[in-house]
Length: 623
Image (cartoon, one colour):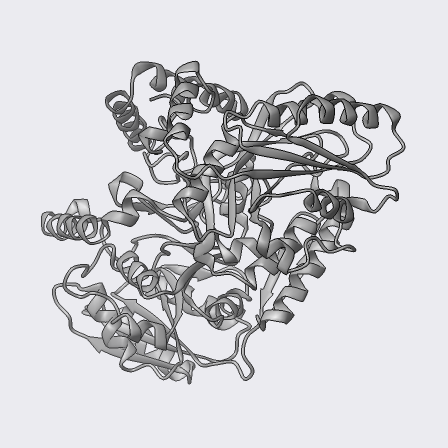
């Protein structure tokens, strides 16, 4: 096994050498500290050179529409130098069509008042209102917004910084998306010594992830007309006022009107008392967000309840009453000991009561397996064994045939080499699967081979990233259960979120959805990628696929069937499926909306930095 791992590493290094210039290769290999690597990476791909600034100005000069952008800044008791830096970050924007609207929230700080007056006199684009009474951040932000004369409001905290290209990319997004209502970018943090760290490389708007935390936050830009229509910021939601704002925006717009700019355009100040440092520093903000989210669920009829746990919102999606019948479909071939572990874990641990189990026996020839299959039919009254003689092995056909025998309104496709860890697994998945417009729901799967990982549990499936190795791969594969990861990676392991595809090793969906898209494709994906192809057709039909970390199972991965590379015939099937996927799903393989172009597609696991980012040439500072 060690020798095998060495071969994998050598193979990866060869890929790096072939793929990138040597300076980029060295940076990938030598960094032991992620934050240091991120700063080096940023200097390569996110800083502005004079040549790139010139290109931006040339682009702007050719625009017919140069939208004015109003930057909204509430100010209250802040260090003079941080406030000055925040204002200067606006004045340093390459895109000059902006106005800075500041509301000083009656702090009584003479130095702050003097500084703001100085800037207002210095630059006619800076407007300041001095509030007569302190009203906290919502009231102050509304006062600042009242100064705005543009169609767009960009939110900037009084101690944070905008990247020099921020408003250029926002204006570019406005021009390219005339129906946009919300525009947001990636972000990172900056400490008291102006050192950047903690990047958050975001996905395109992700409803389930937004129910966990405010994935928009910084930089957030909002259409003024809708902002006014919904009443601006609401008081009594301080600390989560922007979260509440977006939730109310969502009730008035279409999700297609939310535009993501995959660039780090905002630097969030990190100090001892900031939520950038630790969200618990403002626990009231978390409680306000919990209330805003639950009120949103009530207004929109979403059957869910959110609870703030000190770091995120744990959203519990409600199961319909009475609970729908779920048909758990398990294909099997010999290896009765694996099936036994799987079934005993289901029956001993599962708290969801309304289910049946359908075992599909595909060409087993082991006498012990036959005896076990006879035994379990007597032991479990809601279990049936169906013989399927499909040959050669066709995973898609076997599962499609199984659904013809299923009585459930929902299907749970489950591998026989899995084992339930937490009893709420099916309840969690069913709560999500029963939500409107949700298609496939995937679980968090772990390796059980303790010797391989020195008894440290490692992730096997955290969702599927399209584009890994030019097709697809599992997210965060082999990552430890408890490990220090960059903050953009934490949500990918521990937060419920929409995803392009999930593995069929444990996948729940409604019968209605399954039938709508035609089930598994028996012709083009008979064995490999059948689950991915199904999920992508579900997306194409207008559903969302979701992965949850609150349904935990072990998965031994291909214990029943040999790896394809060990059989020439299976390799042909594998290659044909690859070619089909690359042709049929070319667009999403090139750009997965549930991943970020700043992150690598080199190997399974993902979430390492991309060298270079997959961004268009016209907008790349290095071009």
